[in-house]
Amino acid sequence: MKVLVTYALPIEGFSDYTSEFEFIFPENKQAFTQEEVINLVGDADALLSMFNLPINKAIIDAGKKLKIISNFGVGFNNVDIKYAQSKGIRVTNTPDPVVEPTAELAFTLMGDLARRVSECDKKLRRPNSIRWGVMENLGLGLYKKRLGIIGMGRIGQSLARRALASGMEIYYNNRKRLPKEKEEALRAQYLPLDELLKKADYISLNAPLNESTYHLIDKNALNAMKTGSMVINTARGPIINEADLVIALQEGKIGGAALDVFEFEPQIQHELLSMDNVVLVPHIGTATLSARNEMSRYACENIRRFFNGEEPLSIVV
Image 1 (cartoon, one colour):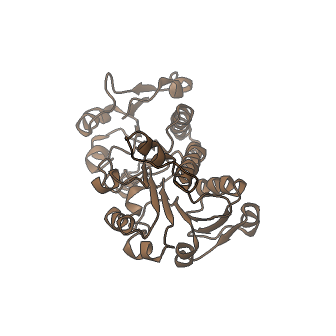
Image 2: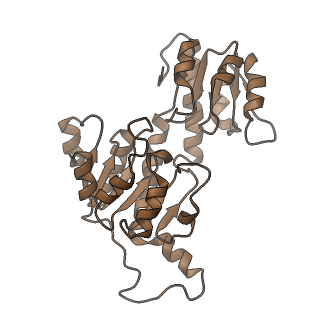
Image 3: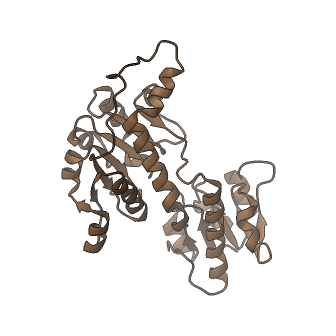
């Protein structure tokens, strides 16, 4: 069977499956274009897709033999789920391998903001841009500070474990409240969103993007936050209204932001690029070689199980 892979991923993650499937990778380029995918998918039994390429009606219609779309990543808003389902095509994702690297990055970004690491680094590289002294470059720190986690799934819980080890107080908001034993293990207190926004020193976004979370952090939410609080987003860019975020930063309502994802990715609001209290990284939440290979294996295993009549590891529809 043929599997069309839309992005040039390391072959190591596919090595256990080359005897079962014929993989079609981009050659001498980073990724297939939408037009190339439309031209190639007609001969594919499975499509291994990326978040950067919308799997829309045109691609799905071109996949005459297509039985499964195995999306590489936990998010699947790049796939027209309803249309795929109407065509009888299974859609899967890869939630397990992304948990630890994404939580690790969220914690790293929070620490960067807390101690102004990137800010000081940039200033040191510019002549006469930084002052040295006991009372200069003071950070907020993490110890005994309040972390508000919006989206307490596995990534949020993994972040909470790291924060707990650093002596932080943990609050969370989630569509469903965690079982009592999990709250106790993480020492995490559930709060309604409006209370969490008012109470937290740091707010980490770890929720999926959907109708209820689109622009969840907007002017009203930012105004409700504690003055000087900081926002970390390793989830999806459109959860934040970036224009409102820029104004809140300019007015000093919030103390800083660290963003791995952007509302109009890969475009970034130009004001954010010039702010010293904003840390920006190019969607690297899962960007470790081991995570990439594990995600490839997981996506391939979803395909293998599907064609063997077994339950895939993670089913979207």
